[in-house]
Image 1 (cartoon, helix red, strand yellow):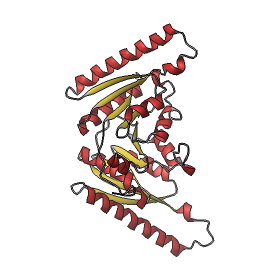
Image 2 (cartoon, rainbow, N blue to C red):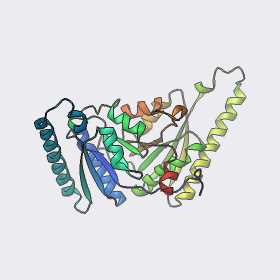
Image 3 (cartoon, rainbow, N blue to C red):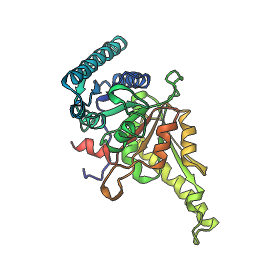
Image 4 (cartoon, rainbow, N blue to C red):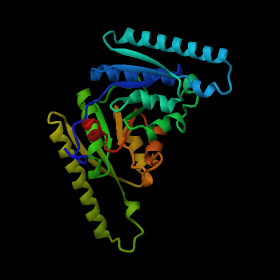
Length: 301
């Protein structure tokens, strides 16, 4: 298998950031359910950030921070085991700052789960800092838990696709749907405004571009179906002038919205596009961001 060949991905262990906030508790419960569904371990991580704190805090303060973190992890693990007695649960009190701590804990195969706001060990977890930092930098899938946890399940996973290059990460969405025994729905937004303004663009050209998009998304759906023959797969091309708005609306009718992370500009630095930013702040359900070529990479390791 070459590095360009997509592979049916293996969903690994689930790593969740623990901070004691309401959002963090929702993330833990979501992560526990996900780990149980996968038949994988749940790894609880509290990033105490004591390496940085040691620069300006005394030894007694650092010790208090660590003791509070250990207590929080013990209480969280106990609550999870009450709900999922057969689930393997491990704990880690990290010395690193949250982004680095979660990335290290996930390794090459895990899935990182965070809440959409945080406190304590994740004191800056307001998407725009830790949450966005993990989603932009991690080399494994990252789930930001959003939405109403009490909403009835829709029985579907939605993948926000653009074109043929999405196949690698799309297979992660297919694996998520397969694990849930849910349907996989591919949604692509054809934004007319992105094709208007060119002197060479004519109405007939726009019609042909639209037909090509529909054909390309259908081909993606067919390929996903080949990898997961028992999965119910549908595809839809939505027309509109706001890609983020259409996907936010779609998130109200699905259990998980999955999208690929953009390739980094010039190969350096974190990159989350405008659409991902909007979804991470406004989606009605958990959002999973998958880095480029993840399915291929985990197969080769």
